[in-house]
Length: 419
Image 1 (cartoon, rainbow, N blue to C red):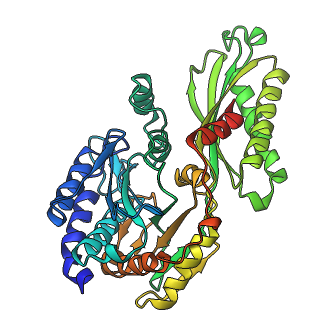
Image 2: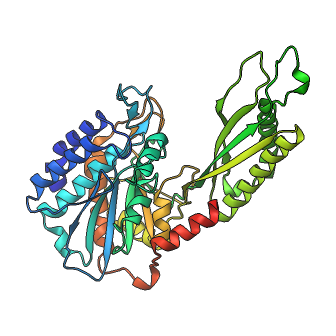
Image 3: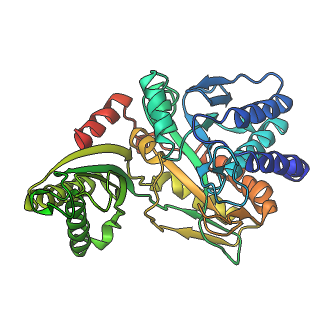
């Protein structure tokens, strides 16, 4: 009954965020909208702010033995051609994060209004995290230079700031890409990790008509690198779901000058860290070989993206049990890995994490036509299902099956990949 009563207001808040998208570390309006609503639900609420636009709030603080986080992401994607993109920033909510916020608010409201959180044997924190999408990097470079952040992703930044230090596990939700005939949720949809590689090829500029003979063509080096990358794909393991997408990022080319510099960038995605490092070495060798063969040079830069996300199968088992107890959801998909990535992978290195997917959308995720079409499922039925998941967790978690690493452990791993 409570989920029905609050449905319309929750839907309106989520839609307001959808129509006012903001990019990562800029979600000021979004943050204020959420905080204003939470204060109406719980006037005594305490909110701890972090990393410019993030914040968390906790229920059941007196329960110290076990602490679980429920995460919602605040930011939009850069998609200026989306039908509801912000005309100034190009931001658009075509990844579904606005629905995550609505779902989190629906769940929080239910727990507070019914006092159901008091029946849980663990502390529960709602964490609203900025900057999940890996974009707008020039702006984030400025923030890093100003010592306002240290990480491009919001969850690694929160990890550095100690937001998750006292938590034992985390749960988040995410829209499922694609359209479904029946109301659907998924579990164990592992995500790829990725690096960002930049190859700056350098040659020698000469007149393309008068004296091409003494020039060294950087564009040709990049072309050879693209050919090598294409031929290399045959050697990538299918099981690792490798993705490489080289693009020209910068050049000084004109038709009457032999180009002497061009920068090619690509993300590199795989399902595990060891293979990520192996393929990165292969790409570096291809770039170096392409430069050497045409008597040029190349500078290689590697930027860490996000770690692979292997969902915790133990925690997912509680979701599977909750599905058996729930009504209104027709299908549970299990073990469906994809090559998308998210900074939940970084957090999952520190502690067990799961991400429950939900249907209810039309259009292509990250596409120009993405929008929800089943709000009743997203803001009423699915949060009710999550309440059952939280109930399943209560009193049943075996602490010996959980793990914990530190932020320092995480940084050691990152340095082993990019240094």
